[in-house]
Amino acid sequence: MTDDVFDKAQARVALDAAEQARAAGHRAAGRWARRYLLGFGAVSAGSVLAVWVISAWVSSAWWGAWYGLLVALFAVWLRRQPVRAIPRRVLVLTILAWSVVFGLTMAVGVDYPAAYPIGAAAGFSVWATAAWWVGR
Amino acid sequence: MAYLSEVDKAEFALVRDAVELTAAALSKQVSTLEEAGYVTVEKGYVGKRPRTWLALAPAGRDAMARHLAALRAIADGQSR
Image (cartoon, rainbow over all chains, first blue to last red; front, side, top):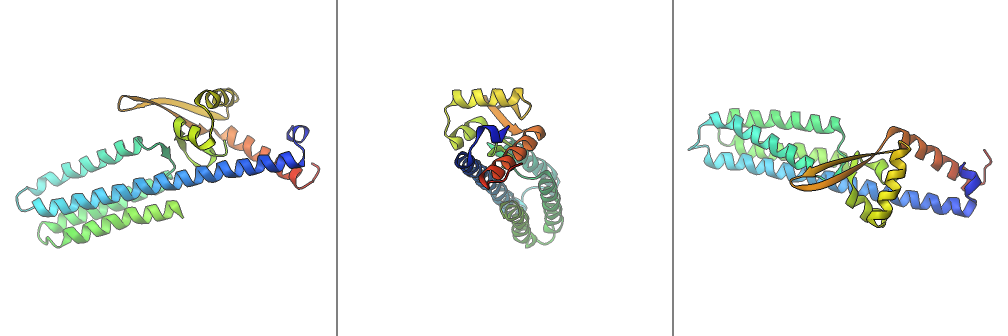
């Protein structure tokens, strides 16, 4: 059907328009995915540093609830993204890797508080790696 | 459709701004594509604000690939 409607010049114009729209979609997908992943990485790292500050006064029994709150925030924030383009596999792997880092940080930080800043940096690097992977 | 081919789903307003169409014109295009099974439309809320999400259906992805291949063949001066 296409070749009944388009001549050579029109076909080139249509191809250019499609390529521009595709590139715009690609840019928007990368921009929103990076913003989301790096934003959440910063929030999760900040939360671990906050735990470091208050850990002397708050029982470690609350860290499970803290984790649950972060995951809920993550889900709500994801739903609010105007463009969703993070591959499900990347998302699941990122959450799993970050959960391991978060759990280890909380477990070790009870006895060795220096684990909190290290865990915050490691947690952020998990999200930053995902952002790099999605935006490459 | 080319814009949607790069994302899982995108908000109607964002697509409207990207393709520089009015809401009415895009809505008409989307309705036609939805009827053809090329695009899926999902309505929901973010907080209290209504949102419309657009996504390219597998049939739409196939149709677009065929269309672009045909356009390339014409532009390259090949007969099919």
